[in-house]
Amino acid sequence: MHKAGQVMRQAVHNIYVYRFDYVQVFALIRIFQFLLMIPVTSIVLKLMLRVTGFTHITEQNWQSFMTHPFVMIMICLLILLFLLFVYYEMGFLFLMAFHQQRGLRYRFLPLWQQLNRKVVYFFSVQVLFLIVYLALLMPLASFMLPLTLTQSISLPHFLTEEIMSSRAGRLAYAAVASIIVMIGIRSILTLPIFTIQPNISILRSFKQSWRFSKRGLFELVVLLAMLLTGHLLMMLGITVVATFPLYLIERLMPSAALVTAGLTLAFLEMVFVVLFSLLQAMFSQVMVAITYNTLVIGKLSGTTHRKRHYKPLLLISGIVFLVLSMMNINSLEKSVYAPDTKIIAHRGYVAGNVENTISGLVSAANAGADLIEIDIQQTVDGEFVVFHDRTLRRLAGKNGVIANMTLSELKTLTIHQNGFSDKIASLDDCIEIAKALDVALLIELKVHGQETEDVLPKLVEKLRKYKVLDSYYVQSADGQKMTQLKKLVPNLRVGIVYALNIGPMEENVDFIALEESWVTEQLIEELKQHPTDLFVWTLNDDRSLQTFIEKNVSGVITDHPDVARELRTQQSENQYFLQRILNRLRFIF
Image (tube, rainbow, N blue to C red; front, side, top):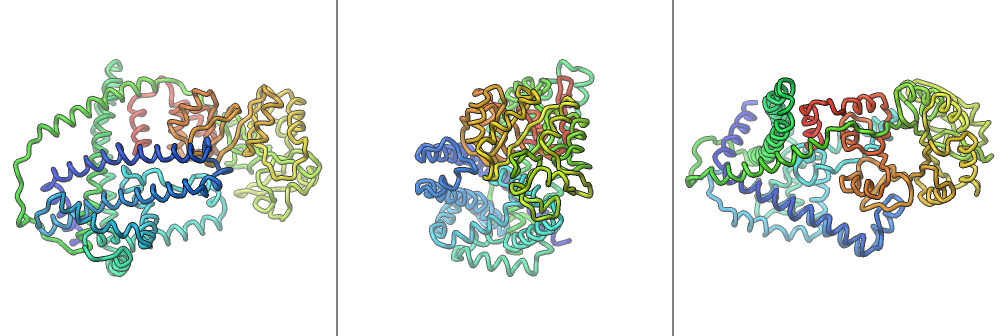
């Protein structure tokens, strides 16, 4: 622990002494990131869509899109560009830290040239080791360096939720995650070793990191934990102090709350950017100190510092603060509304019930859901059963295939989930109960390939029989069938379900149901202009629910309709600006 304390003190000392160097470097990094990297990525994507003739990429067409020669070339170039950005960003910080800790003079141009000399490895087979290295570090990088390009890279929630739905899946997930984290930590020194040592390859750097971390793994984990804990505590403390005046003003001088909120949010945004940049600097200092055992604190030999002037920096900071404040005031003023986002219960209410059952439907209605989503499939006798999976294995523990069984056979079976049990229901059963409860259904048609040719007319007739054509919603992942259904019954609200989407969407349906990972601000605005409703699925944590309710999307599909309803109620005209600010900071960072 004594050595860990020395490393941390030296890191703070160096960052303070060379603070102007870090200001310049981080300013250049952010400018390069936002003015080049992000626009280039967007332009390349639009170019790929135009060249290939695709309007947008979905799970139905992604394979043919990805195998297009032009797309493959562009993706390789984007990966290379991303790797180079990470290499130069972190490599520059590592080289600065190394020279500072050794008391060596340095200038930016020679450091840049040193990094340039090793770019040759990015055009060799060894770049694969760097890709593996960054993939292993992605979970850590996306948390420790949230302002870099790794922020939004993660597994889609619907995949992790499916994995975590069973005990075997949870154990497998925990085992794989543990292995990845362990390998990631063991290889974490690869990049500092590669960038600092002039004559070492990526592979040799990887091996050296592995050997080094074998004896210093505990120390490395302790230092990373100290960094993250200190960073989070500092963020929390600054947030409490900065928002306290707003807390008072909202209660004593409500008329001044909007302007105060805009100023407070701008201040916190700037402070958080600085804190995350400092975290990157601390990270580089600690990694170099651990790798090269440089623990001397004091006046560094051979260093001279010209007198620095704070006025230009203060002027730029003031301008940025004013611009952010005006933008935030305008944005916060627009956020004062009562959202009308529909709360859609996913497969009924699964807490205390089995999915897609009558009991789950009743519980969802009692929890205040605006719509209740159920899955239906056609049975071998042409009827509609309410069931999600193609087989009975997960819920009934049997090997039966839904498409090969009759409705009467299925309704005799008992299904189990999370310690609860219930009977399989028919579509008629669910509609009758939903009408009695005065709640509408969102019916998802699961297509297994053995449907009768008149499956759509049969479904329409069923809805017409119960007089719900004008109030119910029907969706499916089969876009062709939904387009046919919309033509068949123009007044029925029809939608297409997507697990993946990249690019603009121009579908001739009433709504799109899209997995949350692929929902962007641009897409939300495009669909509002169309106009096409957007249902986002499946949102099961408070942060995701709050995010999309605040964005006022058409609907959120969730396993927790009671929580979603409460969050929607809180997001009203009477909600304090302080709460809006805290929510927004969570969304941004």
